[in-house]
Length: 273
Ligand SMILES: [Zn+2]
Ligand SMILES: [Zn+2]
Ligand SMILES: [Zn+2]
Image (cartoon, rainbow, N blue to C red; front, side):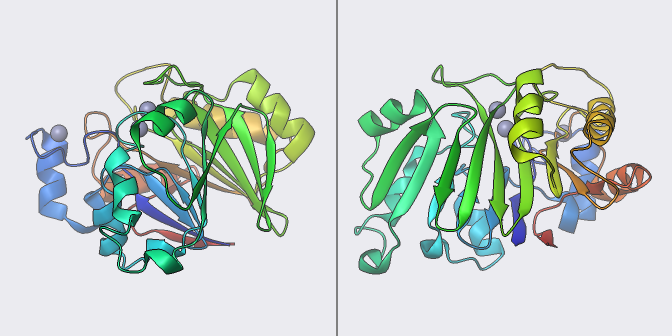
């Protein structure tokens, strides 16, 4: 499995172009891994998780041809994760290879389905509205839906996903606060173990907010997963979705998490498993 982090910032980007806080200024000086677009993940060039306003920029930044994507998974309707206009760019008016485009399975949380249907043209797309705690079999992948501890824009139930292929299991828990007891229970009973755990570390070091995690909650979650036997020493923990208001630039952040054997994601990070 190849996992590419297309974007690793919270809602306003890192740096936020309208902010001159110390972190944003340093990020502009440091460049490279400290420049983060809005969060999104590409797996095996076939599964895209979240479809936010930076998809065009991040796909082009890493020379990715998204016409090969077969499944688009949306976690929730917040504007940094779902930008309706993106769907138009697949349509014949904009895509010169519409006829060769894969028919995409678009998986969205429950109430978001009807919102999309009313507002967006979805040619060559099968829309599936799903509830938490479902298991879907798609094209050699198993996709499990978990309930995220997060807020929503359209009264949808925010989702986290576990993607499984050839026995490798990856959790993408973005956006979310600490894993809900019912999500942990579902993982224990139905998924059993995780090889890669990707967690929301928006809140960093200086503020608490129950619908995102920060450094303390990340360490706590790692401990819980270890104690419950869901991960072991060989599992990879990766943090993403960083806010400039609460997290230092990449070169500093990376060192802090490395001490805990946690990988700090950056735009362009590729994990092969
Ligand atoms: Zn977000
Ligand atoms: Zn800033
Ligand atoms: Zn959100």
